[in-house]
Image (cartoon, rainbow, N blue to C red; front, side):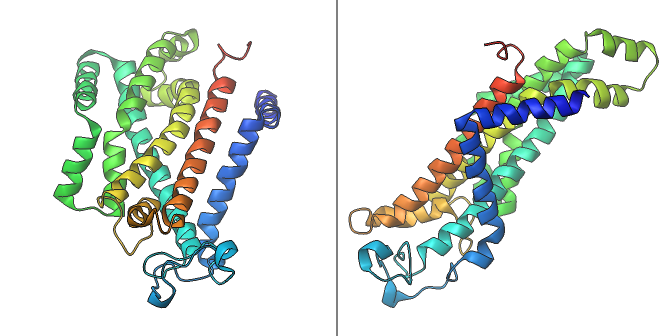
Length: 288
């Protein structure tokens, strides 16, 4: 009875919140576009056509061949935006999943066992937090070369500290509760206690942090691609599209405007969804 009741409560809260409903609809639309990009893209995203370079959107040019216009190499902007959605979501999702896996594991071990293990992990977290993330990103990407796989590994390998600190604090509280102490007294294995009793009770803040971090990672990927240190051509990324359009802002505004709109819309939907999750899953806010 508990699970269906909780699910119904979350569903009612979702549809009762205009921001949450809008955010979820936008996020699902982006996911659908990413999955269906090869089928719905009107043109090949990397095929240049210099005869059609810098063609404005259809409502300005009157030509519906390229609905959102073309870039400086004559490539269809709509098709590139559709394929760029895939990279943004892949990097955002995989980077946060890797960061969460590392952070949850280390944070759980640190909070539950304490002692020298807690001291080592805490000092590692403090060391990484003391170094500006941008410097770490640039140093690693320069050393290993920018690519999709390296970018995901770098993001996941650096951004886990937030998860670790939050999970450690939650585990320190949960492990003192009666049901955890009863499980230890009954002789249950530590792995079973962590899996069945500790982790389920720290999932709420993890979900909130993960949702908000996806937006942060998407902006980070776009920023690195803008600087030429993200995913490399011919793979299409929104950040690279922004970089290509910066020299044409005055004469071809659509090159930078449309990627910027999509980045803003996707990140805003994730932030609003994360705020809703925080309000719903935090028991201290449910009575307000």
